Structure formats: C-alpha cells, structure tokens
Amino acid sequence: MSVEEIRKQMEGVARELWGKKRTNELAEQVELTAAALATLDAIALGSSDDFDYLEGR
Amino acid sequence: MAKPHELLITEALAAIRSGSLSPLELVDSVLDRIEATEPRIAAWVHIDASTARARAKRIQERRDFSGRLAGIPMGFKDLYDVEDMPTAAGFKPWQNRIAQTDADVVASLRAQGMVPLGKTVTTQFAFSDPPPTRNPWSLDRTASGSSSGSGASVAARQICAALGTQTTGSNLRPAAYNGIVGFKPSYGLLSRRGIEPLAWSMDHPGILARSVEDAALILDSMVARSGSYQDAAQASQKPRFGLLTDWVEVASPEIRSNVENVAKTFVSAGAEVKELKIGVDLEVIKAAQWTLLQVEALELHRSLFAREKDHYAPRMRAMLEVAHTMPAWAHVKAERLRRRIRAAVDVLFAQVDCLLSPVSPDLPPLISEQTTGDYSFLSAWSMLGLPAFSVPSGLTDAGLPLAIQLGARRGHDEHAIRAAAWSETVLGRLPPPLL
Image (cartoon, one colour):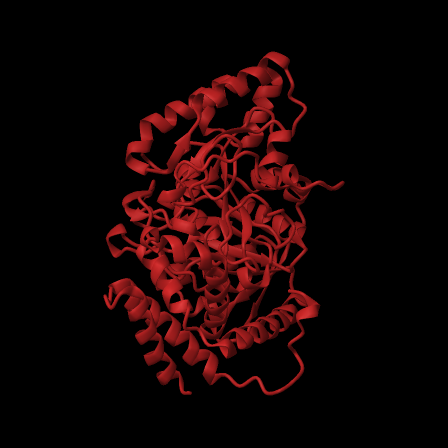
C-alpha cells in the first residue's frame, strides 16, 4: 500500500471516528502524520540487523 | 536591594542561612508577586498559600536549614503529583483528582526542605493545544508549551524555580521563549513515578530556573548520589563545542545570526568550536520522533479516550484519532531510525563535549497563531534521551529572548552542566522582563 493510499485510509478512518465532522485540527494532524509517513517510507534502511529490542534505548 | 522573589535560589539560601531572610518572608514575597502579575500571565492552576506559609513558618521556627533547598518555594507542572493537591493534566474530568502522595522527585525535593507552592499550567496531557498562559516578555506571544506555566512563572519572578516535562520540546522551548534556563537531564536519571506520561520512551522530568547553578542544585536535590552537580556548575573548564551547522542553516535569520555570534564569542573566550553536521535529515528525525510519540500516546490513552473523548482538547483528540490508523511498519522503522540517529550523534560526541544549536528555529509566535512554537531542533535530544540545556543568549531588537541549546552525551549530565554554566558566564544573564 502506498503512502498516498495510507493517507486516504487515515483520513477516512479519522473522519469516521470523529463522527464525520472534519475539523482544522484533524486536517492538521492528518497532514503531519502523512508527511511523517512519506518521509519514513522514502528512506531506505536496508536489511541490516540493527533492530534489537534487548539493547534498550 | 533585590526583593526576595527576585533572588536566585543560591542567593535566597545564603540569605536564609545568614538570618537576613526568613522562609516565610520569601514565600510571602512570591505570593505578592503572583497576586500582582498573575492576571496578565495566567501561569497557575492551583496555589496552596496557607500550606506553603505554614511549612515555611515551621522551617523557620525549627531553624532547620540543613536541606539543600530549605525554605525555597517551587511550582510544579500540573502533571506532577503533589500530595493533597489536584493533578488535572489540563483534563476537565480530573480537576478534583487529589494526589495522595508526592511524585518521587517531588518527595525528594520536599525532603530537602523545598516548599511546594502550587501547580502550573500545562497544555492538556502535555500535547500541543494552546494554553492560556502569556509570555512575560510580550503578553501577545505564547509562553510556549507544554510546560507553559512553569516557564512563564519563573521568568515573571513569581517563583524561584519550577519543574516541567519534555517529550518533544516541552521543557527547553518554554525556557527559551521565556528567557530562563531549562534543563532536561538524561532519560532515566530521574524517576517518572507520579508524573502523568505522554510517551514513555521519551518522557523526561525537567527543570526551569533562573541560573544554571540553581538548576544543578535542584538536580542534586532529586538524585541520590555522592557527587555534586552543583560543583559541575562552578567548574571553569572551557568546553569543546560542536556547532550543528545543518540545524543553524535552517533557522530564521535572527536566530541564525545569534547562534553564529555566540559561537564567535565562545571562541574569543577560549573555547574550541568545531563545525559539525549530524548528517541525518531533520525531517527524518522529526518523522521518527512524531511516529514514536503517536503510537505510545495512543497505547497510553486508549482506554481513557474510549470513555472520555469529548473532554479531550481538539488537537490532542485529533492526534489520537489519527494514531489509530498508524501502520505498524512506521513504528518499526522509527525505532530503527532512532538507533541510526543515535549512532550518528555518538560519532560527533567522540570529537566534542557538547553540541550547540538554536533551541527553536523561530521566536515565540503570537498567541493568535494558536501554536506553542516549533520543535524541530528539540525532538532529537528527546528521542535519544540526551541531557540538554536551554541557556539565554541575548535579546532581539524588539526585546524578545534568544537562547542556545546545549546537548551532551547521554549519562554525561556533568558535561552538559559544565558547558551551560560556562556559557552563562560568558554570555551573561538576561534582565527580568518588564511587567
């Protein structure tokens, strides 16, 4: 699923949760999150083993 | 001669121990100042004057000045539990939720003779819905958030110091916008028990004070250890700074110019300043931090939100609604990025003691803009748990405060304190705002 498709889904679900009323705040949060997802999607990390929950923060 | 409420904590303690000032006089001076300025600032949600006066009087009568903060009144962001005071977190259904015990850090401060005065304004659940608090330097501008009341009250000389919290930029940005010192110690150094969370892996208790030494003294009072952070604040060793040029370049011209001038001043004063780049796009850092905040906040609020969503502030509510749709891959990728960003920053700390940057790319926005300000330069140090300071670095031509951010390696809080204290000595302290 592309980020744009995720964004549409996000808007749809958020609108439904909000009671079909779109507010400025909701639009703002959708924009922020969609932009973050697009940024994360665009960066390639490869498959190196750098994800270890046990190492802690 | 300075009035008691204008004194730094170190000055007030010296006066109390010498007998020239009583804790009750200090508390009364602070209360008078609050009465005179609070209608313009709106920094407090709860003040317990009678209990504070009684405690100050008791300390005076017993002449028990052995505690590190004997007789010093403090305020607490309304996320901290303070015994017998409400902890509302800006959430109406919690307005009368009285804390039965102190948060761990409040208890530690109380054991050192601190006098809890009251609770300061927070944005709801420490998120970004605009608070009522006004900036003492310019009443039409935001005092920032989410530690809005703690920042504004300390700047307005309503209180000697206050605690805030930081998950993204909520302690250092109010410090910068209000022209005071902000300190976020390393993640994990301080207990978070009794503090309402927002995102567990990034929530930090923070300090807002009027000098670096005051902030270090407060940290000493909250942490049981043999050494002294206050000693670090008195060291004269010149730090090795890394100027983060990739962040400086995207700041507004006024902020950029200030930080570049600060770097030149530091070099003139004998410090080493090396130009460095993190090498990770700022938008990537912000995206990772934003994703982590959303998923953690949603898990934290899921149950309460299902029951009480109508009481959530609009922006907080919208953030949680949208978080329900966050794909799992984004969370995994954000965590992977957190490790990559930490590795990139560790490379820089092999060369310098601390990283120098602006706190915010912009000056405090107008209240009419409905924002608590830009967090671009703050999310990295929160995500990585580094100790970081905001130190005042001058005033604009319009009289608004400017500030630098100093971040040190995680667990090296003494390095951050030494660098901040040295910077404060070189740059000087700001005068109080004209209220």
